Image 1 (cartoon, rainbow, N blue to C red):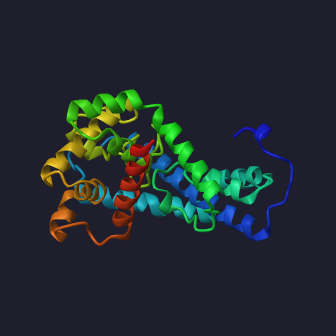
Image 2: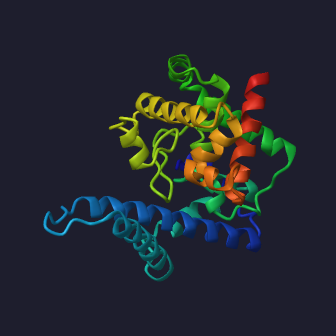
Length: 261
């Protein structure tokens, strides 16, 4: 964060300041969780007592809870630093926007209902996403041709999943431009999830398999990309999860927008 881009005005209201602090705490929790998982990976597994899948899932959940406790009771100081810097912004909405996608490709995990959503802001955000994702157009075109998947659909998935950030990591551990979980990345032969090309190829390969599985139905393929094919088959359609319903709609909205540009 560059101080030169921050004004010296303190025009942010107390209410907005409190919202900034709340979101900064949430971001610190995400960062702490990522750090704890990285530290845990440095500890070798006992070959005589291998951890099963369920144990690993619950361990990750425990790490998340530890991260929340650290953020609440023993802060690393990151949230305070963020708050101090952003409170120097002249415009509270702009300050809050800086936190909107920090460190996560899943902005709904952070309470951002207080962000201004007028047409000018939305238009600016759309242009920003397009320019970020546009950096990977060559890779997107290559994967589109290789796996016969609509280029605009691929672009839309990347826009929704990571906003074009190749180093994005979700709270659940999904990584890279197309937010591949470790198991999915392994199944698709991806060994370097933060490599833009490797991640896009793996993500498009997986998306292609979902399209084939659901007879080319883009809505069901996207729902399975988000919630898993098992959930789609269980409900015989888009699962009744608010997150998945919003995900499918958002990706298709992006696709339509990109198709017209």
